[in-house]
Image 1 (cartoon, rainbow, N blue to C red):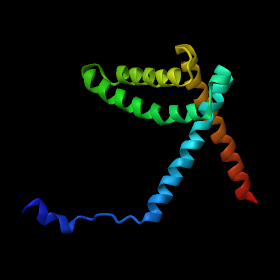
Image 2 (image 1 turned 45 degrees about the vertical axis):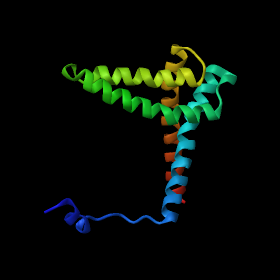
Image 3 (image 1 turned 120 degrees about the vertical axis):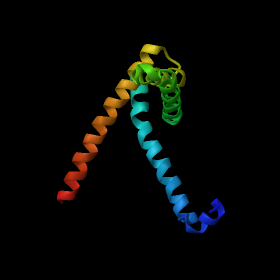
Length: 136
């Protein structure tokens, strides 16, 4: 049986224009929301050099660079395990913060850690507010 003969039996999802637009808008909203902790951390640590656009750029490029370095690092350090690759990927993410906010390695590291802490705090606050709203 050829590949072409199998095609009619494959379930190919159908997407409407509205569902694609809705998905893109949802991704934009999520991207804006996840940029808030990076922006707050950047403002606290580097002041006026931190912009919301810079935070959005960092949260867009950071995960891409992290994933690329993690995959390449895992392949190159295969006999040694993934810890080295994970460390290199985290350094790459810090480098993204360093370059985006025009700061040093220490401030890049601090922005990464502080933005994670701020994100956890925001999630807890939103969770409490959500639970409180459900109780009404």
